[in-house]
Image (cartoon, rainbow, N blue to C red; front, top):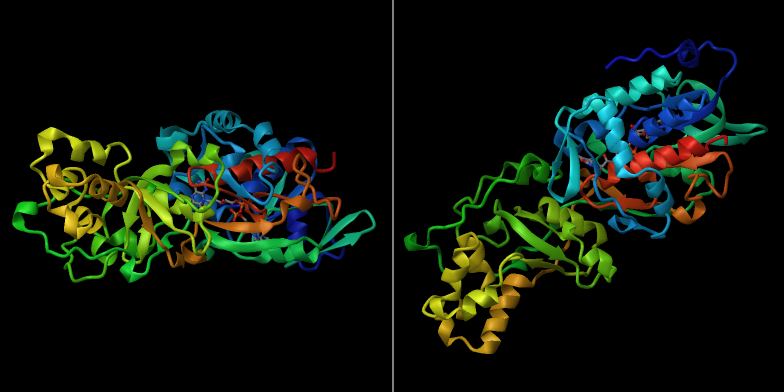
Length: 466
Ligand SMILES: Cc1cc2nc3c(=O)[nH]c(=O)nc-3n(C[C@H](O)[C@H](O)[C@H](O)COP(=O)(O)OP(=O)(O)OC[C@H]3O[C@@H](n4cnc5c(N)ncnc54)[C@H](O)[C@@H]3O)c2cc1C
């Protein structure tokens, strides 16, 4: 990707320029939020300059959705976000609906496909989307300058002055779109938080989100008996599709399907590689009923050597707090109770019934050993309830979530109570705008975070200098 900065931007990169560059709108950060904001503001005839510290814009956008950018979701609601003020993201999301983004992508001629849960992905590399966005900015007269970090901001008589790698830059308004410390391999850093805090903003403590859970080795009982030949798995644990595997730690990505682990191995390590559709929940999180009932919680779970990953676990990590348990329904579509109660299967054991539905090793691990091999017809009501709870309401106690290197996004961020929700303008420093992942607005897995980047970027782009 090459850049042809306009003469104005080139003047900025020229160390001998005597006077600082002036622009109407300075956007700090060329990620999806900053670029969308620049496109919108440049479309209003404003002079817009985007400064990007990295050599290339949009590094996270390029790797998003396994390289195919899950760029939005057909259903985007405020309840799909964790935010200090649940009402905050409503106005921006309403003003820029997923259908509008879909039309824009269609107008750019980019092919898309819908996957589960209304997720919209490109079927071409994400660099095409980045290219279209940048072309639009250029066509509207905006500039993008890379390898130019902003280090400080200060108020001036008629706007703000940014201290940059290339000297001072005077702007009538500044939009902070500098992202978060998540996924530092793609340039994630806390630089934006530092700039906002220096302007007086409060930082809600950041934490890794959409990250795998870590489980202590004794989180699951180890099956007592090794699988016998007659107990060959009837359900082959399947590999996750590329989209479902995004965000997985390298170890988990490379695990083969159901390696023949020794039963003496610690669970969940012995289950590593097994993936299956589940329904996940956080009983102690106190989530609103609208969210707990949402179909997004039914998704794939992957056992890794460290714990739980896959889309279901990544989503739950957004609302998890230390000390909480994670509850998993391993048969979300089938009633285990109905199988146990079926007179036709009275001679069968709970284990043999469950092995028809789940990988054998998982079935053995889940069921209480003293009940697993008894005839279904002989089980008391209490025993049936215990068996059903083991399968439909299995509780895990994570020791934590993986760090920012394995986190797709960062929870927490700049306190949204200090930002006007329609304009994204700072309530503390007029002329300063904050958008994207920098804010304390974090979406579930499924296109919600890119949609927030677009929606907040458009809101600021429409409001800046208006
Ligand atoms: C592996 C991975 C996959 C993902 N997949 C998806 C997906 O499919 N769908 C989805 O919705 N979300 C996805 N996300 C999340 C999504 O990519 C982010 O939420 C989104 O990129 C945030 O956009 P942003 O513009 O706010 O920040 P960023 O994309 O982080 O952009 C911020 C930019 O600011 C620059 N910058 C920082 N500080 C400075 C400074 N001081 N001066 C100048 N420039 C600076 C950075 O270099 C960066 O380019 C994924 C994330 C990861 C890590």
